[in-house]
Structure formats: structure tokens, C-alpha cells
Amino acid sequence: MARIVVTGGAGFIGSHLCERFLAEEHEVICIDNLVTGKADNIAHLFADARFSFIPQDVTTYLYVKGELDAILHFASPASPTDYLELPIQTLKVGSLGTHKALGLAKEKSARLLLASTSEVYGDPLVHPQTEDYWGNVNPIGPRGVYDEAKRFAEALVMAYQRSHGLETRIGRIFNTYGPRMRLRDGRVVPNFISQALRGEDLTVYGDGSQTRSFCFVTDLVEGICRLLRSDYDGPVNLGNPQEMSVLDFAKLIISLTGSRSRIAFRPLPADDPQVRQPDIRLARRVLEWQPQVPLETGLRQTIAYFRDRLDHD
Ligand code: UDP
Image 1 (spheres, rainbow, N blue to C red):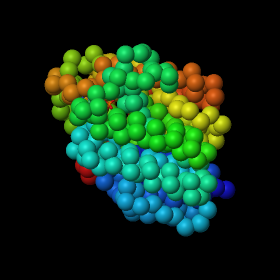
Image 2 (image 1 turned 60 degrees about the vertical axis):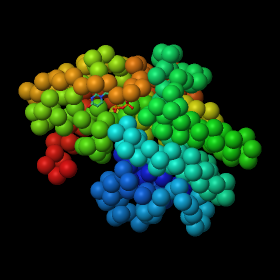
Image 3 (image 1 turned 30 degrees about the vertical axis):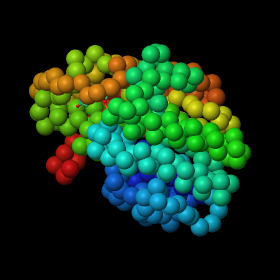
């Protein structure tokens, strides 16, 4: 049994991680300031005596009594809409928050896993993206607040690994979807599903030719757990390599929901990456991991989740 801290543990991916570690009989300390996380996501976990919750902003300080085995640093706004609304908080949690998480890991001699992102590759000029690609990021564009915060976070993690001998892991997470995404978080999956369920137009940004590759959350969580336990201490892409255009994705959602919605084209946001697909050869090799859940299966579960919540959100 291990003692594990999950920052951002009330968020979409964070809450699935808390659940997974509790199922493995570990003790889980969830830290979240609930800016984009939701108490609802973790409400069912309080019944477990091994779960505790600290409502706190990790950019100010981070202290946990007793020994710790691992810290998973998942706190951060992660939807473009959120980080455009919270640019300074996003920069702070990626920089100051990562610093605090690393400080705690050092103090406790715990292993730290950073939730990094495909956004470190920016609007990529290498396709699919391999871990050795340095990226194409606009540092002063609106998305730069997230991209550069995560790039800085990776640099800081590597510095702690090299200077202090800290055990660190970096997962570069590509587009992930599933239950517990916020209906209104602005990302393409909740937007399209809620629009389709309400019979509203699906808002495709640009001409919809830009591509994304969507990974179901249970697959991602499995990849994170394997990375945490692995010996590999460099960045590892975690995502589903099945790539499709945003326009085709809109059509798929209309068909899976049986909706009468139509497609409406809207302006493309600044610096929106034109393509994105993880090269997961490294994850296959060092983690023996690859996604298992077919897109339609994951989307049906996600649609069912949103259908249940449509009237309450
Ligand atoms: N997108 C869209 N309509 C929406 C929301 C997003 O066409 O209502 C597009 C967005 O421009 C991007 C892709 O879908 O090309 C994925 O966007 P998301 O916000 O989910 O995350 P990103 O992959 O850009 O970080």
C-alpha cells in the first residue's frame, strides 16, 4: 500500500486517478482548489477511509503530514476556454504549483509524475509527434499561457531530477475524453455532445480539417499508472493514435446521438494546432501500453454520462 497525493484530484482525469488508486487499496490525498475541478467528481470517494481531500491552491504552499510515496501533479486548467479565461492562474499552477509539488516530493523522497501535454508540441511541424520533437509554440499567443507553463514545468521537473536526484516521470497527455468532463468546459467533446443532445448546431471551428486523436479516460489512466511504476524517466506520449478531422468527429457525434443537429462553422481560434496525433511507440515499448477502448465505445459511455447531466449542468 502506498500513500499518494493527486493535485487536481477533483478534476476530470485527477478524479479517475484517485478512484483507481483507491481501488488498488492505496491511501489517496486529493488536493484541489476547485477552480475547474468539481466536488461532485470526488463525492463518492469520501466513503473510503483511505481518501482525504485538502481544498487548496497548490501555487501558494503544499504541505502534507507523514510519509509519501508518490505525487501526481495534475492541477491545471486544461481546456483552451478555461486557460484563456484563467491565463495567470494557468501560468502560476504550471510554474509555482509545479515548484511546490517538486519541493514536497523532495522533502518526502517521493516520486513525482507531471501531467504534461501534447500542447508542448504547439502547432506541430512533425507528424505524428514523437517525444524528441521540440515543438512549435507561439510563446506570446493566447494559448502560450498553457503551453509555456507546461514546457516550464517539464524543464523544472528535469532540473529536480538532475540536480536533486529526484525520481520523476513526465506524461505528455493528448486529447482525452470521458465521463466527468464538464459539460461547459468548452472542449470539442463536451461541446459537440451537449449541442447534439440539445438539438443545437454543432460549432465546428475553421473548416474542420484540423485533426485530433481522442483517448478514452480509462486507457489514459492505465497509461499513467504504468508510467508511474516504470523505470523510464523521460517524457512519454500518452494518447490514442486514431486521428480524425474535427468535421468528421462532428458527424460521428451526430450519428451516435441520433441527433437532428446540423453543423455550423465558426472562426478558428488563434494558434489552434492544425494536426495532432501521438506517436506512441515509446509507450508501447517501455510501458507495454496502448489504448484498448474503441472510439465509439468510449463515446457511447460519454454520451450517456452527459445525457444524464444535461438538465442539471
Ligand atoms: N473545436 C471545434 N468546436 C468546438 C470546440 C472545439 O471545432 O466547439 C475544435 C478546436 O478548434 C480544435 C479541436 O476542436 O481544433 C479540439 O479542441 P479542444 O478545445 O477540445 O482542445 P485542443 O485539442 O485544441 O486543446
